[in-house]
Length: 191
Image (cartoon, rainbow, N blue to C red; front, side, top):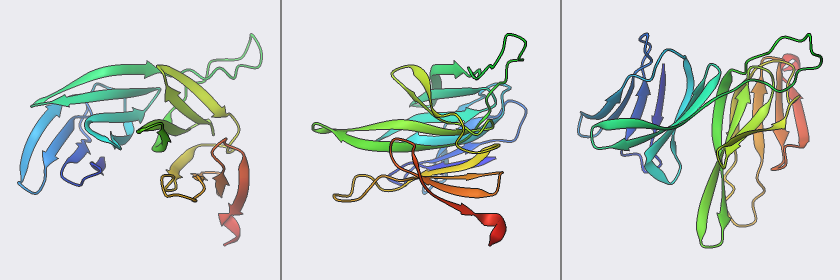
């Protein structure tokens, strides 16, 4: 269902289409499996190795995100967060669960280290992040409908500007600055 390489290209992560959405890490050049885990019954729509740590994996999907650690043949869940949208307009409103459809990492220099925050695109049209153990919505109306793709430009190149690109089911591709303020939008229905 999903494939992702580690930053150094040595490991390949796969998410299966079986009923427990199994996760497997391969040393693909040697043709061998390193680790395996059944992740549970919530569908996974995004899976990536952490940019600067090939032993940490982040997954996202139906009502959740999780951080996994690979140690030898074992994959263990280090953090699990279930998401309920706080955008309830009245006491009669029903809770809407957020399906995290896509994800990417925003990396930045902090002193002598490189930090990475996770950004998500959701089924509710939100751009959100998970950092310091909490989920924050950065823009609750980024798109009118699901955000299927989120990509972040190379932000560690000196002099380059960080841009966040999103593609939604509303037919728009939007470009955002690092504060999630829209700077450009393209109506793909006119193309």
